[in-house]
Image 1 (cartoon, rainbow, N blue to C red):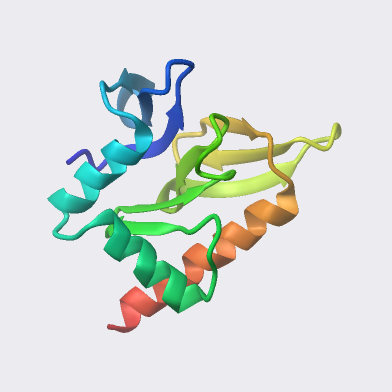
Image 2 (image 1 turned 135 degrees about the vertical axis):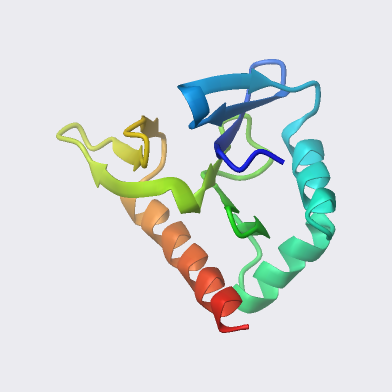
Length: 141
């Protein structure tokens, strides 16, 4: 399992494209994003549904549910998970977020990579707060 993974996104043909901080590289898999997340969940000793149910219950939400895979991989969706525009972002690699002069939302990762999102800063901050709640709960155990 790649500990350097930062974010996941759909490609035009709906296969999963993985961006990693190691050498700032992209990798296109032969799997759709949901299948890829299932494999990652299984490799970490659980099921994707189980991980989603955990987050839903803890956060009392039903949509845009973050998924804790393991100690280096806590993913949250930028959009409806059925959307081709949905990007799964790894919370652990985010350094800062901001809105530029044009109102566009940006995420800066720990390797200084800048990701421009089609997501409001308010929605992004809600997702970050949800991830922080999951982290605090996991650390409490």
